[in-house]
Length: 414
Image (cartoon, rainbow, N blue to C red; front, side, top):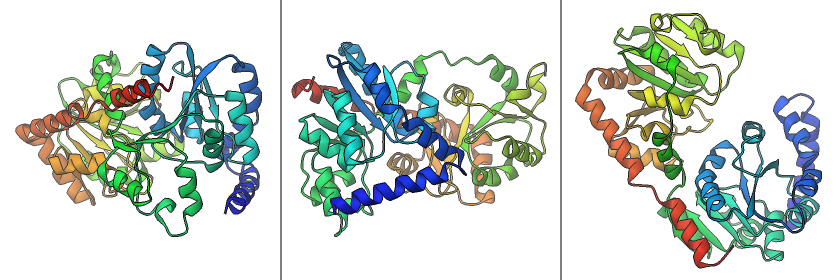
């Protein structure tokens, strides 16, 4: 099986190399990996001590941030090295100052894994949530480098739990300790003979709680919102916008709307604007305009959404109406506002739990979306109670980072 796995990686690498000529994301994927080894050679000296975090993409990076911050505070003598698999994570965080070095993870071949581990020689490796690369895991074990999975999440349909998944189970079992988000993941691991597991929740709760204490002031949002209620539609895709438009176009003047699309593409932004029947302004075109005159504000830039939620009275979080994956519901929840999402959220335990508690509402069609938004806007006690539930949900789930730090100290991993 190891041979077949390596063969599949080699075939995939050829396919990726070919598709770079037709796909801009694949071009970044290939180009970004070209200089990884030379970067490691120049940036990591033989005498350096380092902690390696691997994150599939941006969401996993955000889960890793609280732990990176704590390790940097308590062990400043260690370099923090972050690797990404996805260009969407690397391109956003490549210049972030939290990590001492941010790089792409080379494809999982035996040669790449051996060279990467040799050059980086980490004292501790931490994988966030998921994405397990066998050759890297085997090299970490071979070099006796302690390895942790943090905020892990497992599903029954993953290869580890299939009859033909023996090779991947072998790779998974090289990890000395697993910190998982919920009971179901622990049970799945136990079903394949992995007992070195602790349920300690999701480090994202620790991450988002800090947002409240930061400076979230945005003057242009204050000028836009005035004294109106504000629905913030965050990380939306076309499928989300299609069910929101009916309510947006028919809502009373007591509510204003901020839409922050997940993808900032000119054609899509223009199409969205054309379908909105209210006075609409773009972030990129707001200069010199009286923002108070507008009913809809489209944020056609990145990096502002977490601060914008500070001004929300309710939120719609995108991704679950289609199949791209639900985006971060914890950011708005930490500000104590009720949340509406689409229908496809069964793989997101935090959404399922918050829905059970009635701090979050799922919709399938424009009519249902309009109905719950109408109630949240017009029924003040209902909106306030739902928001309070969301805030309490965040505050009752913090502490995952502290538990990982206690384990690292107890086992003397650094």
